[in-house]
Structure formats: structure tokens, C-alpha cells
Image 1 (cartoon, rainbow over the protein chains, first blue to last red):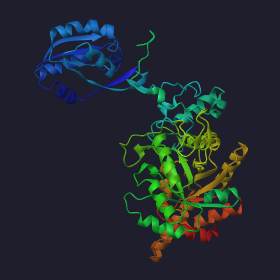
Image 2 (image 1 turned 90 degrees about the vertical axis):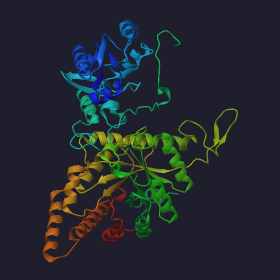
Image 3 (image 1 turned 30 degrees about the horizontal axis):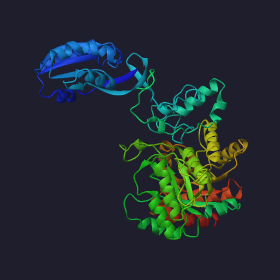
Length: 216
Length: 321
């Protein structure tokens, strides 16, 4: 899921600025799980805004702020309320989708979008994928070197580990030692011998669009 | 052609020193040390913002060294430059007659002194070596375009004369104190396959560890020239600090004890610099032992700011080029 963190409230208030009326849009998926954009956080933000003398004229929660069709329907009452601004409590994708559906109203984010992560337990999310577009997990024992190695090294470790921990953050295990251990456990150490062909970055210029309908 | 290449390929014992550019634009100290190293080493390996600490670029000092008649070795890490920048620097280096290089992945910016710098890592050590090897083999740049001066057949697009392509004697590094060693050996193989002709190791402080490492390289069937990294210790505290903080460094306790004893002796007699003197002795002993036992193909001395001591160490070890 997309992991988000709340921005400092001062930053959100600065974005709201002189606006007198505000609407809030939450997100019922990732941001709800991250406790950054669910029902509870919408209420919490509304209370803060009211306390600051703002009028919260409408709130809504989309199933997925990143899905245009659902957002379109949810934004009808928001647009009708015509607030001075909208605060979107989702990931950056959701904020942009909400803004597209509020053409004349400023839309501000309340969150910072951090990474694609795994919920390892309640309230703990670990970064697990960096969307490199060329998945290597089949060669690396399902441990991602692009994400779990601080240098995204694809040909094996640097010399920088100390006691199995990464030089960049000693709380993190060296990704390549994890890869080694996993490949050893699954009898696939021979996979380490194969060099990965460098695909470069030429095909990964953003922003990209993937369409099942042929041309965009 | 590369002095280091000539030495190693002729089966001579290779000797290189290391030098860092200044954190500034006055190269006087480096050039003074270079004068002392002239004729004593097969190359002076210029670091590329070692420990991710900002310095003048290595290419600048390499050019200065070359102009002063000292053979430079250009270190290139993938930390700060993408493939275009690396290849551009390689071409500039070649224009100044710099033909020996060492490829490294590079320490991460967050462990350095400009931690907000964006890490690049477009290529790692293996990638840098492969890119240069591909350039040499094809006469083309990293985008597949012919290098200027090479002759291209207009009909087929083939390069019929690639003699304008620079070639480099390429090296890489390895960490012999590493668990699991399999991972270092495996990456070493990739570096050699990608074009590394010589390998310099992290600092060696225990001859038996070095022997075990060389055996592992042999067993893996990897053929290359290995140069033992030598770090002259300056004090017991330095050794302890490195043991705790520098990956791949393992100074044995008996060496630390000897340095501490030297410091105590100096204090008693009111003489300064005894531990550093002992460090020079120990480095010379290690080099002489490596040479006598025929372990590997040379030594790479990392004096960490005390380059002026390198000729003394070599003299004490009875080594010359």
C-alpha cells in the first residue's frame, strides 16, 4: 500500500491561509490504514480547523482517492458547497485526482507520501518496492535490492556493511546478505553468479501512462 | 601506457599510494607529497570524495599529478555521477594522458559531510567497469554513438577503425574481511569479468586473513592481480576507531597493544610521535612479509594524509619500483 505521513499541522494551516470555508476529502484505503486520512482523522482535522475559526462546510471520504470515477461522484457535493479550499487527506496521487475534480477550488494535501510499503504489523510499515519498472525479485530471492539496499545495487553488496548491517542506517540489515541467506535457504545460490543486464533508464522517463485500451 | 599495467603484467611487485584532493583549491600539500613519491610508486591513486566527504574532484588532482610527472590513478565512484558524467570524465582524463583508473561504488552521502547530496548510483563498480570495457571494445559511447575520431562505415554504420578510443588499465577494490566471504568473491568475479585487471584490498592487518582470502580467490578460479591494502596506523585510538567504524577493518589486539605501549613509552620519556613511528615500522614489516611470502601481486598504501611517510615505509620494507 501507499504509505503516508501527516504533515505538521502548522504546514497544513499555512496552506489553508486566509480561507474561511474548508472542505475535507478523506480516503478509505491506504490513508485510512496509515491513520492519515480515515474518518477519525477527518474529524480530528475538522475540529482543529473549527478551533482556528474556519468553517468546515463539507466532508467526504472516497473509497480510493486515486480512482477518478469514484472521486468524481464524491466531489459533487464538495463542489456544490463551494469552499474556499479543499484539504485532501490521501496520498499525492489522490490529491491530484481530487484536484482534477474540483477545477475552480484550491486543493491542498495534509499528508506527505512516503513509499510503497508492507504493513509488517499494526502501525508499522516497511518500505518494500521503489517501482523500478524492471522487477528483479525472481533473481534475488524475493528480497528487493533496489529498495532494501540504500544504494540500489544490483550486482551484489558494497563493502560497507558492518556486522551484517547497512552503512547508511545501521538498523537495517544489508539487503545483499538477506538475499544471500534467502537464496541459500532455497538452494538457489547459483543465481548470484548471473550478472544482471543493465537496462538503463531510457525507458523509464516519467510521467508514464499504462493503458489496456491501446493508445491513450 | 599505464606504469602500473607495465609493472603488474610483467610480473613485478606493484606499488601504489593513495592521495586525497584537498577540501579547497590549494593543492600545494598534495603536490609536495607527490614530489616525494616520484619514482617510488607505480601510481598515485586519487580518491573520489572518500567517505563521501567533499573534496576537489579527483580528475583535477590527477591532471596536476600527471603534469608534475607522477603517474595518477583516477578513482571513479558511481555515487555522484551518472554514466554520462563518468564517461565524460574518462574522456577528459584520457585527453590528459591519464590511463589508469579504479572503479568503486562509493560511500553513501548520508555517511559523509554533505548529507543532503542526492545519491546517484546509476552504475556501481561493476557497471562502471563494464561501461568502459564496452567503450573500448566498441569505440562507442554509453549511448552506442561512435566516439569522435573513429571511422564509421557510412553504409553499414559499423566502426571500421576505433583507434581514437581511449583505453584504461582498470582496477577495483575488495574487502577480504567479510562475512559471508562468498558475496565478496562473487562480486570480485563480476568486477574481473567486467574488465578489472587489478584489485586493491581494504587495509590488511593480519597476514593469515589475507592468505585465506587469496586462497578463496584462487579456489574460485579468479585470475587477476591483487594488491594488499596497507594502512599505516598512527595511534591505538585510530586502530580502535577503525575497528568500530570502518567496514572490513580488523586490526588485531596485539597491534593495538603495541601502539598503546609506544604511546606510554613516549609519555614517560617525553618523546612525541612514537606510536606513528611504530605504525610506520609495522606497515613496513607487513609489506616485507607480503613480498617475502609472495602473497598477491603488490601493495597499495593508504597513508590517509601522511603520504610523505610512504617513501620511508617503502625504504624500510626494502622495496622499490
